Length: 543
Image (cartoon, rainbow, N blue to C red; front, top):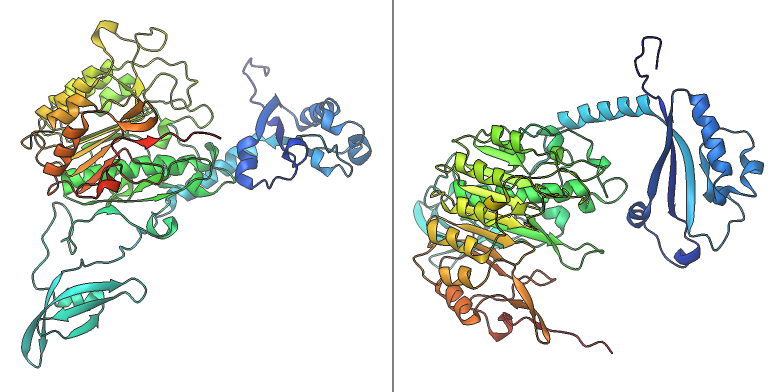
């Protein structure tokens, strides 16, 4: 306290970090930066008003730390920190961890962060990756030769030379670049709502190639476009878990960007008439491939769109605890009768980090949906508590075209986790999804990949009528269980599932059923017997 009784903000922090030493249990292992960062623990020993006090505390801490005993006094003597146990010339070969002791200048760090944030916000968004081909195979052209018009069509495209092979009606062929194809197009491309004239057909499915050549990792997308839902706080992307020294592709901020891109891919298909393409990559620490949707427009394009309530945003996640800052009050303030899209992430007991003590009220989601019931077209719900009442509320939205349910939390009547009248909320079920299918005739995107495996018999039976959701183009379902000696057995009557998918062969553009670790659907419409794995896979018997 100062002479006026006001608290004085500390200027220095004493930090101790422990990390794998490469010795002991780590002997003979190759430790990369990502692994070391994941295993590093950081403790704040104390905060101090003066640098002298912080230095003295660091010396005391060094003497109390076993990794420095017997050698550090001779090496460092009365030197100020930092102190690193890795500097020992004759280290203990059985020691698993090394330790660093150092002081942080709080004001200098705050100033550096503020400067870095200003620079990051000012950075323009990176350019989207160019499409592999602007014009689809089969594109028609008319080109004059000696005054005579000849009809032709694109029959192939060379990704290296960027030239199109065109075949004419007399059998002759030639190569044209994209500008030449554009100038000889047989008809004007159809226009899309609120967009430039489309020069290609809608594209669906996977895009192959190295992830860095296909997708854009936009580190500052959330800094550049602050969350318009109140309650968030901006942090530098590297402050989030796995986002410091590791590869950007494995960072938490890119995970959030992938969730955001997936939302805008849904919006693009449902509202702008876009296709739906995706790619994937493999993380060493995760069995299944990571999916990356490739929207034609993203948060950079829609940051100021008043019809979108985007609460799937890095600003709403605490970098240290994973707590979600989204509150009932702020969500209801953001939604209006004009809202067309609601994207929510992390609204669950415990937050995305699982440690938050803040209670959540699932009834608020119902209220938010009811506010925009007449205009809601897209709804995305990721790592949030799901109830039947939320599903029934969505079923009342007659314009609903897109639904995304991903890694949702199972609701329980636990007053320590949830607020609101417990009689108003019930556990989500297959009947809730069935109600959406039977009520929302314009549904064109359905992505259900949540922990409770809700998509079961009732949902598949609802789709058994081709009059139900006749406009459905994207169906991505992950719902399975174990049975006898098999795993990943698709839930539901398999004869019904096969009939549903076969009857929708002409309308479904992207169909993924219980994808395996290689991101291959366990059922392919029109495929051979080998592509029908609704019965799952046989369990491996260990020898």
